[in-house]
Image (cartoon, rainbow, N blue to C red; front, side):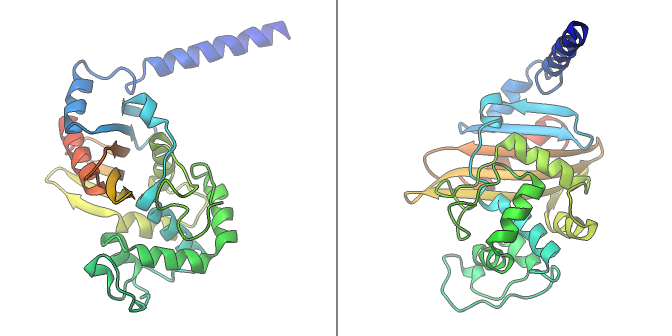
Length: 269
């Protein structure tokens, strides 16, 4: 029994040692400084792995492991669950706008999953959530091991801001995206392929970018921004998550800009 104990201790030590020397913890000299400049003065974190799960870069370890609201990045999950349960027939099935004036002009019309993803349509995803129902949403949160799996604050807004109960860290976002990219989530290949396709948002001469933004508003100010997704480039395929914080004018669009700057610094964009 004593021998087994020491073997376990030795394995734990070697595993910890290997992690400490991984690229996420020991990037090229000067990389941290280059990445820091990409945040344009915002406090933030960036986590990136290759498609096989090998760490590439983790900037700001403390924030990378801090659970926060997923905001609109959770629309990825609603899309997946909606397709899986039949609440969404396919990416082209229309949901009728109810005529209630929305805060964004492009939301004031009928939408399908394809347009709702590209135009950030909150009412569409709230309606799909209602169709799925709280019981099935809770079941799939646990099945997918998504963040803290907590929607106790209610089906309306558990994912939309820090007032909601759902939390996920940037590192956990990458865990989830890694499984989605590889189509290893416990869902149909069809559901995963449709959502991945709809996440395509940009391309350069050397790469294609897939992602979803998220923005948090608090007391009338935009204070938090997400951009999470995948990159397919000539150098390889990667999954990543970016999160930024501030006191005003912090958005998912800004987090996407930061992400592109970092990917360019790494030579992937």
